[in-house]
Image (cartoon, rainbow, N blue to C red; front, side):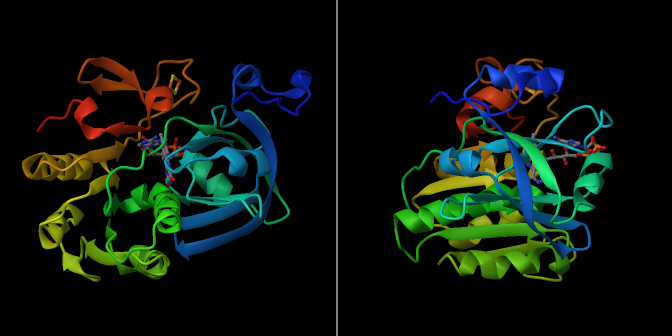
Length: 280
Ligand SMILES: Cc1cc2nc3c(=O)[nH]c(=O)nc-3n(C[C@H](O)[C@H](O)[C@H](O)COP(=O)(O)OP(=O)(O)OC[C@H]3O[C@@H](n4cnc5c(N)ncnc54)[C@H](O)[C@@H]3O)c2cc1C
Ligand code: FES
């Protein structure tokens, strides 16, 4: 795939010049809707025709936060939903610092400057699928679940969702069950579903013969990978690291893989679990 970036090269910020010569798109995206599903969880839907046309589940975008140079670096966000008919994509994020607070303060008349779709997404493995998401790791799993549901109508897909409490988790239960997924939940405070951690829920669905896809905090994914290796189940993980460029240029996102260091932004963020070095 090769694309022409429809931006005046003299007016773009210096480090997105790298994107100019790559296959990703840089788009100025009008905001369609901005909603809150919890006090600090925000969903922004933007018109992004080129990104929506080519995005795959598990890929991400680098978002320019604000129009100035503070913060200087773009922020990475998974593509949460993709609607090719309406040329739109959605980002789901938690407000954790300066950049996400600025994004949460935007309004439907504003627009977002995005580079994407970036990285390698999920590959479709044996069905049925079991998706395991913790916290904002739920974000890329909705796009994946939509694609799985569109490919094969089955009642056998599972999703196991974990979060701190009911407020954070409840809005997603209907979303995933609407796609035909069997939903099970775990919360840290026991306010919705299992009182404990989401990997515990894997015991409830075994015996299971299919593919596990997971995204969430590193210790959670490590537990999922441990259980999958005990059960000999194929597992794909979506890793989150600090990213400065998101384009393979700064080496800021490297993690230890089985055969040396890997770039999460270019070789991932999704990897077969067996390619990542875990402390199991
Ligand atoms: C490929 C990828 C996809 C992501 N998708 C999502 C998503 O869909 N939804 C979502 O809510 N978040 C996602 N993140 C994390 C998101 O990029 C950060 O939360 C965001 O950049 C924080 O920006 P900030 O300016 O608000 O916070 P900052 O002020 O930069 O930092 C606030 C705090 O968050 C921590 N932090 C910042 N970035 C990261 C990071 N990448 N990983 C772990 N901790 C971090 C910092 O250490 C600090 O403690 C993703 C990250 C990656 C690498
Ligand atoms: S974030 Fe710069 S190389 Fe990956």
